[in-house]
Length: 414
Image 1 (cartoon, one colour):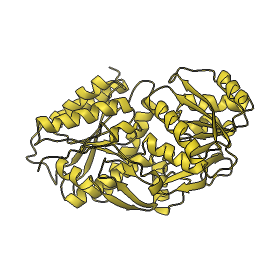
Image 2 (cartoon, one colour):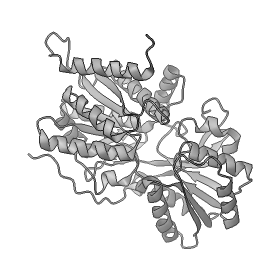
Image 3 (tube, helix red, strand yellow):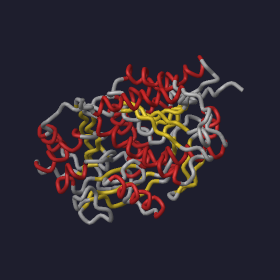
Image 4 (cartoon, rainbow, N blue to C red):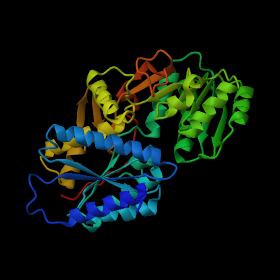
């Protein structure tokens, strides 16, 4: 019988679930800290989930080589949710029933809302069996605003922080006069459009928003008509929160159409983008968290280790940050119990190689420095063997993205 990847995933889950119900009698050494990784591992978005899985497994192995977390080994238990919220909740319940008290997810904000809601209700139903939710990549600001949860911790910048960083940088660029906003038509893209439309003219009254456009998520194959509209607007700058094919196809169309406007992105440095664009992406500017173009020897060594092991570029600092701060929380609490972990993460400050990184107590949103870089053929790090990479051209202090929150945090009862 030939086993498919999906079948093997389910067999692994069944085994993990069975093991989770076995008594610990006879188990050698301390109990493991088991983390359910629930994300897309099949279908059109599998590339994101699979890369995330490689990063979290890499970090777990790295931690285990150094003795684990407070002496406990880390185990990653992967689940394929097929980008489906209903299936995610079924898998999460099974993970909880098997004794897992920590879950990691990040490839979809809509699923993130479902997970956050479930772990909140889990504590209400069974306060003796809480679950900590480590959010490694969802950017919808609502998760740490009106829909915040004590059990949810976000280790990536949300879209409010990203746009605040973009505005801070562009406000200093006198050549930016006419801006066109191009975004995917879903919550993240809509939020970015609204923030930039309001924030840019406030920061620089001489800046004009000369056009806004929302594109159907993942459905546009020819961006030439959009390029033509941008050219007609006279824009000198295009800002987009597009990711994946919606970004690479637009950048290629802009290059082919001779668009002179500078392209500013939030996800230009994601895996696969360098290979997709190469020379067609030259000059693209990206505003994001730390990556290998930022000099920090300790983190550069981490990225080099990842590349040696996986034959691919280290791309998700947010996943590394999640695991580093989790380790520090467990060591602080000297416990792998979910309540102890959550209490230790609440307000935790990590003195990182790039400066203090805060898990904000008010909403469990990470606050960290932001970096601006340009896609070039003389970058210090060659991405994906393309001869291109990102050169750092600016840095934004963490204080600049410490944006207000509407979260009203309700912690566990004492």
